[in-house]
Amino acid sequence: MVRLPDNRGEDGKEPEAPSLAALSQEVKELVRLISTTDISELHLESGSVRITIKRGATVAQAGGGVYPAPVYTPPATLPEPQSAGLLNMIGNRPAHGEDIAVNEGEELVVAPMVGTYYAAPAPTEPPYVSEGELVEPGQTLGIIEAMKMMNPIESDFAGRITKILVQNAQPVEYGQPLMVIATS
Image 1: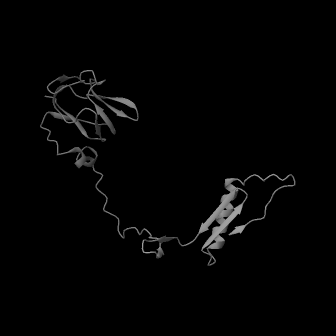
Image 2: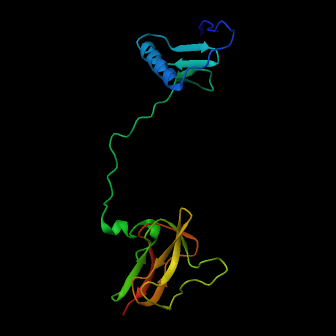
Image 3: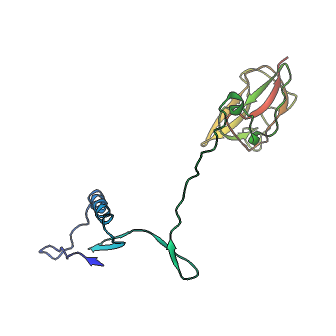
């Protein structure tokens, strides 16, 4: 252990601790110097500042032996990236369940963002829409809460709601199918 000389001023007061930036530069220089030697551990104290630098971390094990700390080694190859095609972006993923069969004359309403889907404006109020109900363009079908903001989901189509694919208060992902509307 190295103790640096006491640097008290003539008034006997302890000097202020060095700034973090100045201290950081000094520590970097110490690490650089120590890396060129066979020193494995260094302790420095000066007033209220204490610094410990260790090289070659070790791990004590139950048997009493000391072994080098395990080091993470990344895999030799990275996994193949999945296609970023349109189908992956709009609901053809396991989180969205089975494939949604859309017949001719039907349109999907998909989540425009990640969040929590709510079917009604408040827990005690009726849902915005239900299966079998007629809707008009611009009509609110539900809301998605994202970052404490309530975002209305509006219909782009006129037609009848044939399927509601999500439950109230269910988390949804971007592009996840929410409803099917028969437009013809």
